[in-house]
Length: 102
Image 1 (tube, helix red, strand yellow):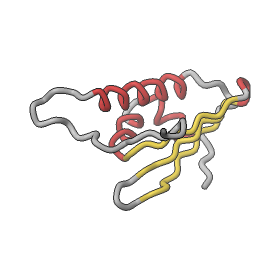
Image 2 (cartoon, rainbow, N blue to C red):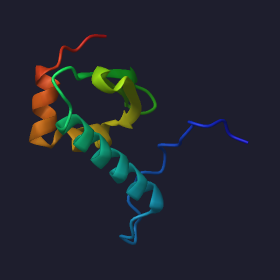
Image 3 (cartoon, helix red, strand yellow):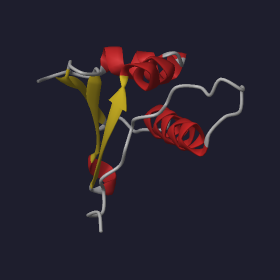
Image 4 (cartoon, rainbow, N blue to C red):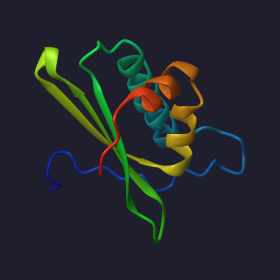
């Protein structure tokens, strides 16, 4: 039995027949959820993005701190998912305005 919180981010490549797999839909839901949460965050929101792995695949750690809710969300994303997240203007503005450390 796997411990809770361990997720695979492998197999995100599109299938050759053009059908979207359930793993791709899950990643899309996570990215959409992050986009909404970042865009709706208050003035105390802190956002940090750090690269944690370079080989065999680039993996980034995104930490979203919402002190007004007493909440921190940590998500691991590959390069494609991070680029998709940063494609939204409101997210890019928050990242640029947020003090990045790490």
